[in-house]
Image (cartoon, rainbow, N blue to C red):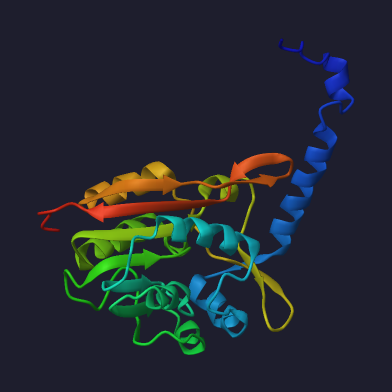
Length: 249
């Protein structure tokens, strides 16, 4: 049996917790205003010294669990860890028996801090690899650093370097969480807290870019967690396959 709605007077007095939600929203706005946002290359140059090649915060733990759930069997396959940072996913691929693992990232500081070799300093939008070079491309929490047009170019580059029938797996800070005020922040060596440059790409934006690149989405995950008393999606994980016979031209 459905309960009747609370009287307006009860709601106004805070019977549904509106005052607490308002206070939380105001705190988020104040905190956001106080945190400087840095371009991603500048941010990771500062973050690198304290950025180990493993999931080291709750968001990354949630993201990695879903990425590994959707990661195909990489044993005996060639893998690109794109925007590898300190090499988290490349190292996992190597541990799982990948035949060849290569990293790529535009942050020299992150590459130097990490243990993944070989690794190229390169932009996601202009990869220094021949077409059809890899059977699996993994890209963790990086496409959101790119504005929309650059994100589309990066996905086209992923498709270009994939072999036919290959798998791309990527994750992003969920656009819903970002639009609710969530940010990826870190503490720099000087003790200051910064946010990393981010652009919220909707699921529909990714579907359009993936389709335009000749790939097909084969799995999607949007794990939910409690944020301010409500369950919201915190990360977006998408698995794609390069459609056979797509020329990329």
